[in-house]
Image (tube, one colour):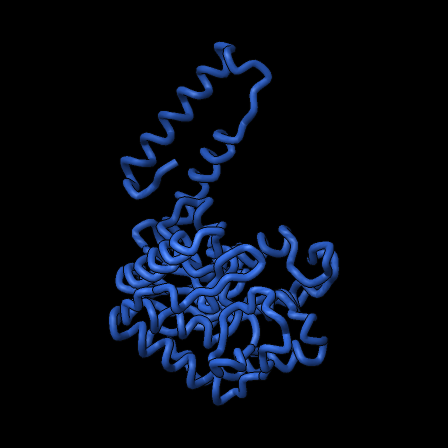
Length: 316
């Protein structure tokens, strides 16, 4: 008896992810969830140099500024609640010192530029189609940084506007990296602060727009994170306490689906070795000075050295 409907996934044949791959992840907090998994298994990856980016225009701005080698100056930042902020970046980059923030921004821009050039795979996760315009400048912001709500206009991007933004993102990436695989996905996190109906409308706009631009023949793809959460995991036991974010079980499940579709069989075997070493590194002995534990550490170090010889990029 089958008690679950499952989404059929195609195994990537032409450019699967392996331990020679270089990945850049941009977008909503679900990018960090997948990015953390890639980091745990020691893939070469970078995630969200500018912090979490929720909507398509934020990602477009990030990529545009990186490719244009924009230098962030004092004109791009502002002071609020005893910290310096920038509307182009998440508050993770904000700082008490203005020069520290500017250094963070320019470092993030340089890293993004380098990764756009060198990545074999770029994974872009869209969270929402709702955007905020700063009234004083009419500019779309990446993050409001708790600036008063009355200073922004909130708008829902149309399907055409999202499609245009995604086409620009692809074109910009192709200017500097023609061969990279671009994988789009929709975050399974529900933005219920916008409202239940408004969240569904937002996700529908994103999904419709993505399906107008993805084209495997041109190395752009769609991975159904949102659909897996909504259909295969349609139960609140797969949500965190806030009933909005997927919990660790759901993240593990979606990661396993992503792995099945995108990670090569050879890399899957290496992942098992990495996981074994990671478990060993987190082991807490009753007696750290015992002969038995020293022998365990010797064997663990031998495993690490053998793996590093086969995959020099792997570092523990």
